Image 1 (tube, helix red, strand yellow):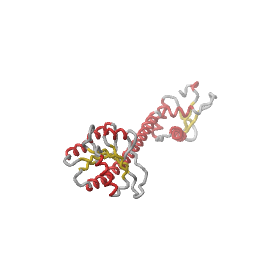
Image 2: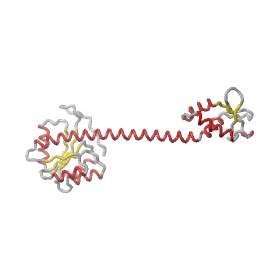
Image 3: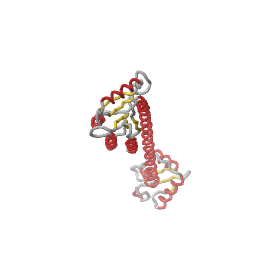
Image 4: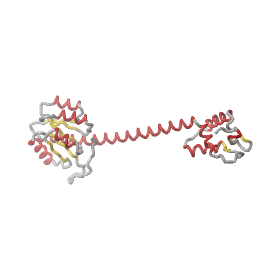
Length: 256
């Protein structure tokens, strides 16, 4: 699920409102966290409580949240199993494990499985609540930056691929200059068999650029023209400057 940052502004702060999904099976702990957040005036944190990991997954299927805060020990699916299930589903919402005292090994395992932070509860709730609030703001900001960087990288890669595609096309067209030249000369054909199709080298360079949007070096053009002359497909015409002349197919001087 793609994280979507809410644009609503808190009435008491300029910080964007942060939607927090709090997964905790104990109503007392949910209420305690809510009260301490309110007392500390964390007015930009909008906490949505659920009582189980299963309920959290069901809600995450319908709504987007900025961060998930989950207890570890819960009936049914525990906090680590919830984290693993979220990763399987491709959910990239930042995840903070809110563990009990003595569960540091579990917290480290959570970090190894992709959790962004962990906070250990203790006998005094004020300290971990302050830490939790700070971590919430940190991981949301980190996620926002990572998302912007990822989008920028994706766009840069797309631009690179477009440039590479253009280079390939340009290379292929350069390799088939003979076809381009004969095509341009054929465009000057008339119904009159005696009418000659004439273009100067300068005209050819300009027309190739205009019609096919590629820049041909003069040396490359001359090499192709010499090959076409050797095959008897085109020939030089007398006059001012160097011109290219072709006569209609029935005179067997131009093979189109």
